[in-house]
Amino acid sequence: MRQLLFFATWLFFLSFFTTCESATHVDIDAVIAEKVQERLTEFESIVNRRCRDRALEEAGLMADSIIIEEARRKKDTLDRPMRPLRPDQPELLQLKDSLELAPLFDTSTQKKH
Image (tube, rainbow, N blue to C red; front, side, top):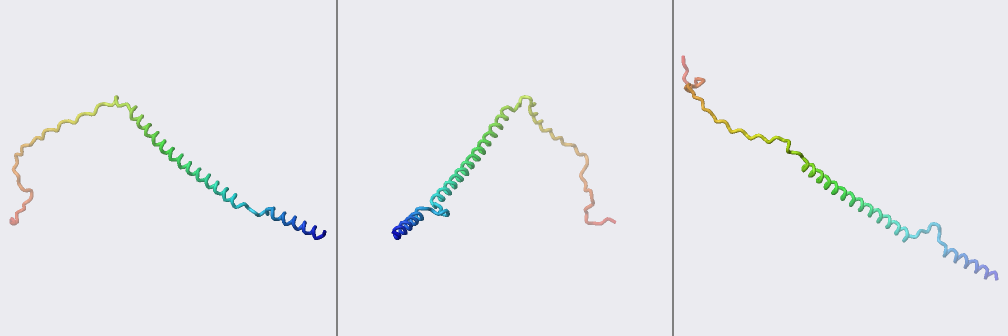
């Protein structure tokens, strides 16, 4: 009987320890799945942020173009005076030269005494 009780107790503890998980036991697959899900969520948020930034940049450029085009169309040019015409080129008058040409300096090589 004592052996049976000892064997039953030993079997009970053996089955208890094999079915029980320790406090430090971590389910590796669950941790990996959790980390993968976190990385996927982070990746999706980065892709969405880049896409939103690119869309806002393109929308800003398009809005700027529309505003500039409307400003050009609304520009009032009727009050401006016409540009004046360029005057004719004046006629060049030739002056009569009554003096004969003479050198300013004596460039002769002979010295005068």
